Length: 82
Image (cartoon, rainbow, N blue to C red; front, side):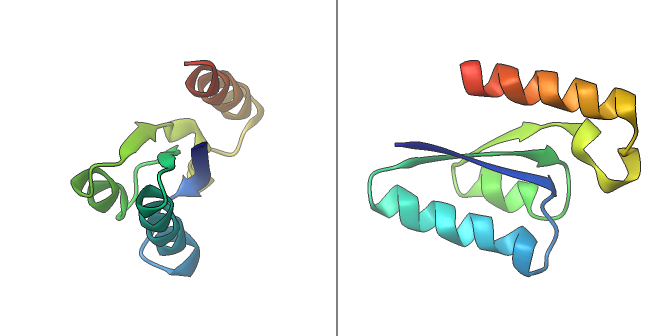
């Protein structure tokens, strides 16, 4: 199974770190985990653990405007399709 973890940013708090722990467990169970979000603190750890991180800066909390939302939807749709 392929799982896409989607967050605004992966920060070093519970909601930002839990997807990494979950993804490692999925990997042990034979599943693939992918991550998409704006760069944060945890993206370097995601990459260091050999997992795939897609940078979608438009998902950042600081970029919550209609144009960024449309761009983010298009990028996430492309990630899912690929």
